[in-house]
Image (cartoon, helix red, strand yellow):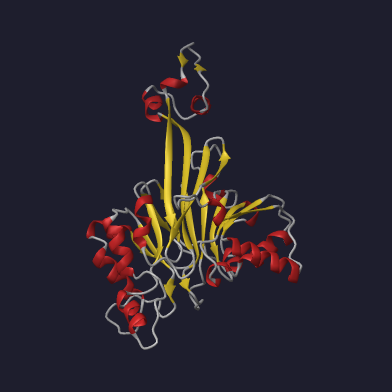
Length: 363
């Protein structure tokens, strides 16, 4: 299970309702033997941060996520709305007394930025930073060597960068989580008259059990090992969603920028002294997701010009315009699996299933 918390969903500039880009991905194992797992699942879980715009650490204060358990930071590209919060976040981690090593996967220029800030602002780390330059992971065929790590012997994570198209080199990250779980056939035990008890736990953890009547319950008869894979792609700024096509066959969710409606994107390009900002329109992303048969789609990185209300018949740009355009091209059977993210929205992803949860936000 991956639990996504959107820390910032605005493009370029923050607004009163949206911070600039940041996405937390908690790496959860709901099959672990832990009491009150739902209550503590974020506070005690390893998590990733994809992009770190200015103000990200302030957003995190309104969530249960702990900086002590942040395992990896992935930066998609060097534009400020995706990385200007990084130094402040690292500084706060140090001031909080963090000791665990931290991995940062980012363009090499981000290392230069941190080196400069270390010299000029006396930025000091109490923990080891493993910086992995994206350039060093790129292979001759244009693909990237994935970064892999284990949270536990039964819980593996793989992060694969993917090149996408923007004004500066930009990347998506495919986050693959594999959990090996012993699934107990509880119905079979109940049918035998064995109610929930310590017997269930022993069987699930691989121990045969001898009952009071000397009958032996063999764990192999009641436990099946299953492998649960949950794969998502989180895209950086990208005006060619089709560049992700070869990586989408096994994903349950695509998180992708949708900065403008197609009409506004065309207007920006065609006005006098216009330019191509190289962002995706909602139409582009929705069409791609439809063709690629992506089962769940979350749109983010919304231009600050779009108001937060949903009124597609009003002339003032608003979320309703984005929603209607997305629904036009992401066919009807998928519409219940389409969202436009807001700050502090929380989603759980298990294989191909996505569920939107209530806000984590609190004052």
